[in-house]
Each structure stands twice: as structure tokens, then as C-alpha cells.
Image (cartoon, rainbow, N blue to C red):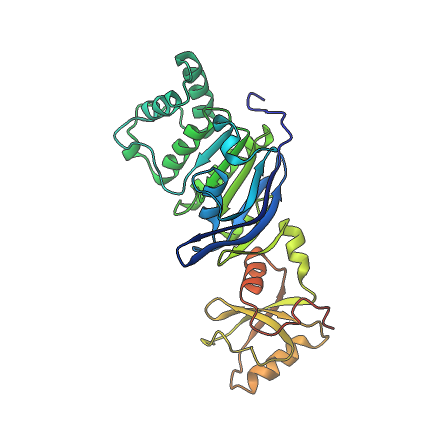
Length: 317
């Protein structure tokens, strides 16, 4: 385990807020991140993910609240122990992979032999061995992200901060990237990652669901799926109105995915029959209905857009 840190580190946010002019980007964000876990900041564009990342790596200061990393504020935490991969590829396209790594390592005053040894290890880990002389501009999107990750790993950080590292990357490359992250995590690195992808939220140990600068919930994916006091029904029908089921008393909340609804319903022995009767009264006669297990997409949709009343977290029988 050449990467193991052996450090029991915790990150703690306490009532952190940040505004940019009239825009409240992060509103009273509080959470703790345990040593050795993969922690996800999950939400759409504008949720506050990047702002939280930039606060964590001390690129900007909070307006209020506090951030602690291993009992230290971000500006006092050793620079080389915090690896940061920003949202946009920020290395040099007219340099090769090796030249980029050498340049980045020189910023931390690493000696040539250390750079060479660590570069070989990291390139092998990220699958870039054999491409050392390829220009960064000529890399695929997935390979560029691997290069950015490789650069951030040169100092052997205790914590990796990854801001939407797989955004716009093809599915096979996303899968490969996550395999690398799991390997790093097994070697002892704490990983904080932001993503808009709900399937990637499932891969984290715990996630903070964010929307509009506020945290909706923070827990493990499995625990978040247990918040539903009821059941989820998938409905497929030729319906274009996303609010079609809002007047159905059986339905606690709904989310719409173009001719497909996920309905959070009260438990009832005749739920399918009642939904069919409701749709029939609105001139919809053909429905496909089935029970489904809620996914993170459902959890986020139901938390972010509670349209059907304040009872939705109660035990509705």
C-alpha cells in the first residue's frame, strides 16, 4: 500500500455560508466527512457544489461559519496533503503527459528522483503508462481527467477533492475512473467528490444532497432510500403533463421523466386499481404499473421538489 496515510482525519463544516453579490451560493451548510470514506456532494448545476469545494481548498473564504480539516482551518492545513482536481481541465495542452507531471511536481519542490518514481506509480495506477509522450491536447476526455488526477496525486495527499471529475465523460471512462477512486480509497485516501449524476451518488459511502445552495439530506445512499413511508410505483403512459397525478390523494409526491412517472404513494392493497381509476377519470385508459425500489434519482426528486403537501415524511397508511 504505497499510498496509505494511516491518518484518521475528519473534515467538518459548521453553518458555512457564501454569497456572490445577491446570489446566496451556499446557505448554512453543515456536515462532517469521516476519515477514509468517499463522500459525495450531489446535486444539479447551481446547487453549491463547486463553491463548497473551493471553500474547502481555501480558494475562497466563507462569509460565515467554519471549516476544519484535521483540527486545522483550510489555510493552515499542509498544502501538499490536500489534492485538488478542479471542474475544468487546467493543465497545459501543449505539454506531454510527462511534462505536465514534471511541471506540477516542481511547484511542490519535489526532487527529480521522487518525481520519476511517483510518476511511474501513478501512471500505472491511472492506466496512462505508455502514453507519457502524448500531448495533453490530443487526449480523450477520459484520459485528460486521468492526467488531472495523476497531477493531484503526486504529493501523496491525505484528502482528494474532485469537482465533477466525470462530467461529460463517456460511460466506460466514468466506470474506469471510479475503479481508480476505489483503489485510492482502499489505500487510505479520503475522497470528497461532487457529481450531478445520481448513479455516482450510489457509489459513495455517504452523500450530501444539495439544491439551490442548501443541503436537503446527508446520509448513506441506503439510509436515504429508507426515508419513504410508503412505496414507489412506476407508471408508464402517454401523458405529457408532469403534474397529472398531483390531485390524486393516494400520491404523496411524484416525479416525471417524459411519459414515465415515479409516484410515492400511500400503502394500500388496491393501489394499482385506484391509480387506474384516477387516470380513467382523466381520460387515460392505458397504463403500465409496477412497484420499484427507489433510487437516488427518486430520493433527490422527492426531496428537491416536494409539491404535494407537508405530510410527505409522515407514516401515511
